[in-house]
Amino acid sequence: MDVEKLKAILEALKGTDVTRLTWAAGEESLDLRLGHPPAAPALTQAMPMAAPHPASAPQPAPAPVSSPAAVIAAAAKAESDKKSFTINSPFVGTFYRSVSPDSPSFVDIGQTVKKGQVLCIVEAMKLMNEIEADQPGRLVEALVENGSPVEYGEALFRFEPV
Image 1 (cartoon, one colour):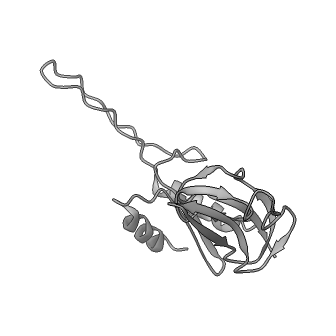
Image 2 (cartoon, one colour; image 1 turned 135 degrees about the horizontal axis):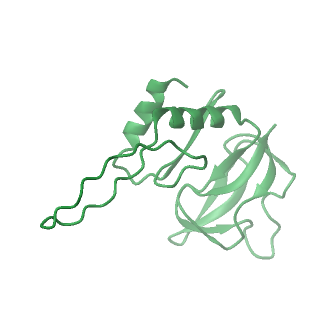
Image 3 (tube, one colour; image 1 turned 30 degrees about the vertical axis):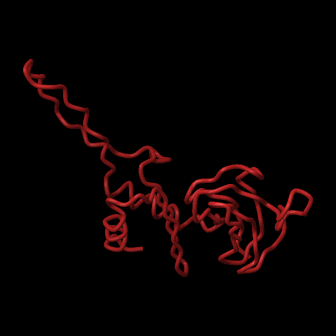
């Protein structure tokens, strides 16, 4: 992924409520989390602080600024990590692994799924929404407990590509 594409994506996300973006096209993939501390240490830019003037109100400390090199390094790591992918919740709701408590799970650990296969249900506003696999893979890990609340963009399952 070139730097201009990455800058365009980051610019498009400014001012939105989006906190996580997972994108894949061909061999390129990108997983961005906004508003959270970075997983790896990021470079910060120190800003000199002037002595406070007694008549002025206290000012908040400057926020750390990630360098473009840190963002590019994170994108390169995401692109090189092709070992697994996640299926994320498209909205806020309650996560269910099966149709009812007595029914078997839609998918079990170790099972291979096809594109379009139902993986779970997320109930939102009394509507049961089936979440489908967007690509084939083998289920490695279920990341959410049955009956748990989930947030928009939260990872539900981790798969290995097949």
